[in-house]
Image (tube, rainbow, N blue to C red):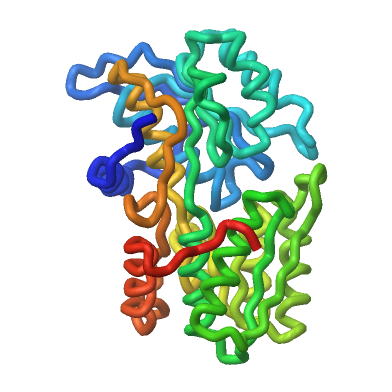
Length: 349
């Protein structure tokens, strides 16, 4: 199926930077100068950790609120249940479809099986899933929004290698799944591309079916503390809300933190910001907005939409200018080599 072109995606990224950063859980926006609200209704269900993770879920929320503000769509968002494994995801999707939502979005690969069960029952509903590929021939009303996390993670690894003073870095994954393995693979490859003598710590907070590794800041803090105690002075995470604990460990121990999915320098507390070198981001917010916009325009996206470094779908952040400026030229050169195919980044450890 067709893929969003680079120019359109880049424009959407730029426009998204102007969107507000907070809204109620259910918002009805205004549409254009005439103030007429769109008839399109959008429901979004968060992954483990929910809103406030400063990462993946919050990025999806930004796309939703931007759609409410700019497109005038009526939106609602639903939090996961505490400790769910998850038994309620299918019901959550079905209820939104049953209530007449035109777009129903599941944030995270854990929505794949629930969405495959629900989507055929509601053929007039436009479903979308983030971070998982659903067969576009079998499920024609489902759009898969997927990212080259390994490419951005390679740049995170390169940044770690360029800034470590101890030649010792770390990676903390929330749950050991194929998706989070992509972050690990990219990070390790990026570190080793610069210096294969650097020691790399790798820890996961939980194993499936236990998904609490994405929502346990205390456990994240403990894992990061242990890596620091073993000598790591730069730690990258792909652990959702658990990353908040990892960042606090960086503050407590004066080591360098690399964020994920959202710009974690921008959304960190002021006293935490100096410890955030960069973040390996993916524009979940833009992909959510584009999906909703396609429905508003009457030409819904379908199939698999892929986003990578070449179209700005993933990247590294430069918000902490003082920290990133000394290594930015080298990171940009590596980024271009990946785009040009000169560096191939694996998506498995």
